[in-house]
Picture (cartoon, each protein chain N blue to C red):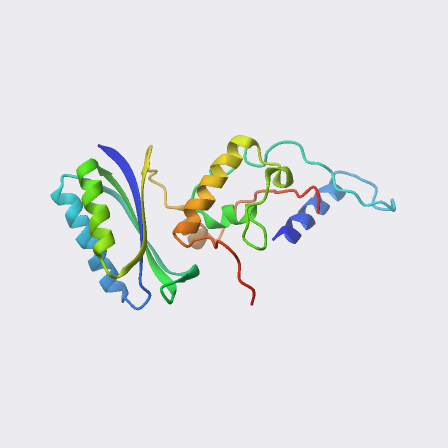
Length: 97
Length: 122
């Protein structure tokens, strides 16, 4: 999942006019929380697709310094993920294979 | 009276008509105790994120109810006693939205809301 997100940010950079020919490829630090803007979806423990974006491939929660979520939303995400795990919508850990 | 959301996960080998029966039993209990069922949803036979008692799938049934303390205790007890329920949750919420749950929305409309999660460091 994190790889997809990487690709998204690459697209974003190319759209915003950063020179593609430059030898250095760098990630632009996006400002703001992805859940704070208007029209962003509400955090809900019944929504495993949304919450799945905030967990790693192993099933652990991603820290907010990586996902850029503000602390208020991170707290809600934390609660929802825990609740979601109990009713088996999200895994505690992804088992291989 | 307060609002509660309840999700029950029923064993995979129960047929879907029996799932309705089990859910009806719970709703009967709610009505006997002067509670209201505001919203019910059947999410279908979903794959569980991890095995529970050798079940890889489960019938998910969602209920939005209005209840008082005595009913919540009774309902929680009845859910625990039921043998076909493998997992359940009963939580207090501020309000119950009338829109379908996000799980059903993505299934029916096939529209995915885009949330950009940028990863700054590897």
